[in-house]
Image (tube, rainbow, N blue to C red; front, side):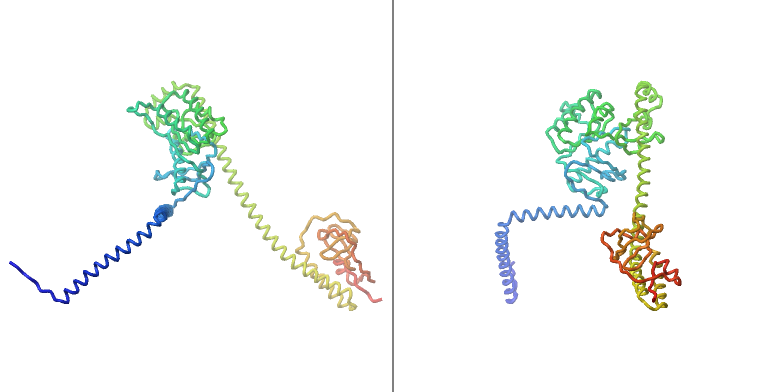
Amino acid sequence: MAFFYVVPEALSKLVSRESELLDKKEELVYTYAKQISSLFSKQLKFLSFVNKEFDRFDAYYARVSYAREKDMDFVLPSKGNALKLENFAHPALLHPKPISIDFSKQVLMITGVNAGGKTMLLKSILSAAILSKYLLPMRIDAKYSTIGSFKEVFAILDDPQNVKNDISTFAGRMSEFSKLFGKKATLLGVDEIELGTDADEAANLFKVMIEKLIDKEMKIVITTHHKRLASLLATHPEVELLAAIYDEKTERPTYSFLKGTIGKSYAFETALRYGIPQTLVAEARVLYGEDKEKLNDLIQKNIDLELKMRQTSEALEAKLHEVEKLKLSLKEEKERVKDEFELAYSKMAKEFQEAIGEAKKAIKSTDTKESHRLLNKANQLHQETKKVIPEHKAEPLVVGDRIKYGSSKGVIKSIKKEEAMIECDGISLRVPLSKLKRSGNQPKVKHAGVSISKETPSASMIFGFAWAQSR
């Protein structure tokens, strides 16, 4: 059965036109794509670089955004291998206790109580170095923290025993240590260093190896319960001891550390805490020996003494801080009072100069009443000035010395206690000794026919003035 359909001529033309335009579009897209590809192919290396840098920027931006959201900081690696952490929190712990440590020497040996935080402290130090090396955010007080630059962070933490490869625990440890002697600028962490062999033999072996690694400027963090190894390395100038602290009253670790001492392991106390029968622990204590118990007691007394000294030191530091704050406050108050005084003194000095001017006018005046008025005004200004003049230690001046008072020069006529009668520009003045300075130049003395009036004793006593009398 055949069929046919009828298409309007106008519609047929539109369909044909549409097909032509689509073909033209494909040709243009191909042409432009070919031109763009030809242009970009010449800049392929640059485009690859830009793409890589955009990826880098995107990664940095993501880290910064995450740090802001989680209230974290960045610590950029610094030159050298200094390692100082202030309030660092391990990123793997939900509610970590922040640690603060100044690891300035080559080796940090951590001893002390079982389950007291030794391994976590070691891992925290290694983690901080890795986070800084790869520019990752962390919970830390970045302002007071410093993390050195390390080419590699190497950790020996787990039991390397491997039955298939016929490797024992100690053999695995030796295999890992053998890789270290060709490395430099490395941060190494070793947990339970004496693991897997006789402790006394291991102590001597590890002492020699650690000293060799120190010569290669390697930074090493070690945890151990081995007192012999700790005692062998304790006298080395590049070894720092740190002990995990145990609270004997609560019979619990404090998860804090004491610098400069060897800590007890508290194996018996830890065994009791985790359910070992007390009778078995008591029997073990007897086998352990009285001498070793005394040594442990001596170590504990040393720790207690160090803790007490630290508490005393912190209390003294707090008091010193308060004293410094008070000292600073007093200094600021002194500066404020000084500024106020200088302002008032400058004002009074100006008024005092006006008083001298009034006194000079009084001497030259032939009007007795006007002289009295001017002298009284000068006296009033002088008394106001004296209220703000500071008391200074008197200079060793004697009668007849040439002196300078303000901008005027004169001679000391007499001295009474802390005041001197000076003759300055033909005027006699009584002034404080502390306001006088020595002058090497001969003063100009103006001679005038004057006599002291008995009618104005108060003005003449204050200023030592004499005014002219008509003859």
